[in-house]
Amino acid sequence: MQLIQEEVIKINQLNKEEQESELKKIYPEYFQEKEVKEKKELPPLPDVDHVVTRLPPEPNGLPHIGHGLSFYFNYYYARRYNGTVILRFDDTNPEKEELLYYEKMKEGITWLKIDWDKEHYESGDLPLFYDYAEKMITSGDAYICFCPQSRIKTDRYHMRECGCRKRNVSENVQLWKEMLSGTKYILRLKGDMKAPDSQMRDPTLFRVVTAPHPIQKEKYCVWPTYDFACAIEDSVLGITHVLRSNEFHTRLQNYIRDALGMRHPVIIQYSRFNVRGSPASKRQLRPLIAQGLVEGWDDIRLTTLVALKRRGIVPETIHALAKEMGLSTSEPEIDWSIIEALNRKIIDPTARRYFFVPNPIKITVEGAPSITVKLKLHPDIDYGNREITTGGVFFVPRSDIAAIKDEFRLKDLFNVRVTGKGEEIQGEFAGKEVKKDLEKIQWVTDDHVKVRVLVPHELFKEGEFNPDSLEVIEGLAEKAAGELPVGEIVQFERFGFCRIDRTGEEITACFAHR
RNA sequence: GCUCCGAUAGUGUAGACCGGUCAAUCAUUCCGGCCUUUCGAGCCGGCGACCCGGGUUCAAAUCCCGGUCGGAGCACCA
Image 1 (cartoon, rainbow, N blue to C red):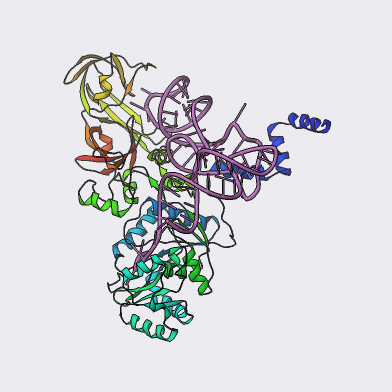
Image 2 (cartoon, rainbow, N blue to C red):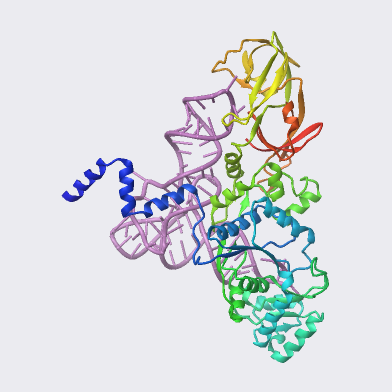
């Protein structure tokens, strides 16, 4: 006890730096953990001698934020461990894939600032899949089935085996050949029809699909199902780590690989997540688009990557969001406020500032001097300025002026005393002195551009479509805003961060967030 | 119904594997205050949570059992 007290006194006499350096000698882990926490990184991966991951899109639609996170997780770990990331198209259903969406997936990934080392198409591996299929047929692990779909379904439900299961290997080999030439049988896994996990009850491995494939055209008519193709590919491509959402179950794929004596990747699952009030599934979105309730796949209320981009959400925000949520296994209902906060933090240092006046009202200022002001493009960082020459006529936000009792300040310009309110406002010049308590309001002069701002709100409220989810605010912006290019993200002062969506006579901007 | 996951403040997350340092982390929202010629950023402060019930233990957010609730799968989709 005595000893301890003496030591404590000794240590307390050291200054902070000395204490830290001492601690580093005996307990360096203390500092490592601290750093990880501060940066907010994803947890480390197990078994990382070398890492190969995959980005596995199906080219059947536009990527949304869920794809984005999945892409990022897999990309992140490959880069973190100096590994390889493969863009692999899971395109084994000719009925659903479309050429266009291969490109859209790539565009989405590129927009996310994610790159990949190799590109691979499952649809190019059919001979390989056939080889493995034949192995499973010869080993008695798979059999051809003639039964109609409905029968299979009820048999699986009731754990009944069908007659097809009893055929011998040579019969199956023969039938497989027939199948390859187009006869509509299916190849099923000889699993366990009594398995409590119904997925293991002889699932389909191959089926005949006559629809042409966007890449392979009509070269093949027998296509593997997802679990078979994926099981093989993950092993053959040397994938070491699979990060995927929990709608996929691992048991069947592992079983198939075991049957073929193949290596397993490490599988890490996380939960699918939702953004509050924004459905992500195509099934829910299609009717909204068809009915014109949303503008299209890039409607700013949506969470497709094109919509996020259009709204002014930057790719780094998706990265940050992935780190924020981690590989969570609970079912999150992400609030837009989290996405907005992350985005704001990222764009605030670069977004140039401009004056925008929503719902403007004209004000004539008696005795106003004509001034040419230089207004800074950013309050904290020097990005230069824009120049505005003023006269006696201004436009200010209607709602602001309504709250003014007497005097206010045209921000960065001068003070005005209100002398009359009506259809227009009258005022008089009230000095240039900056007064601390005076309301500062943004303004534009006669020399302005018209701006329409699209403001997104929750698309669904309590499960119901929200008819007021897209607000349109008309207003005026200073002339300089008229020269901004499409895609520029700016902050309209005292209004919010917006992305220029369309230029021309009238500008359209999308409201990202405050 | 069966199988697999999960449940920490309004929201998201850390802690759980290896029980005590947890009257529980960080972020966000909300509310105050400071700062600022933006209602942005920054800074300070505040409210706010371990699903329920048993068990093990000197000690449970953490381990075990049982509920409840939520999600996913049970396709010739991926």
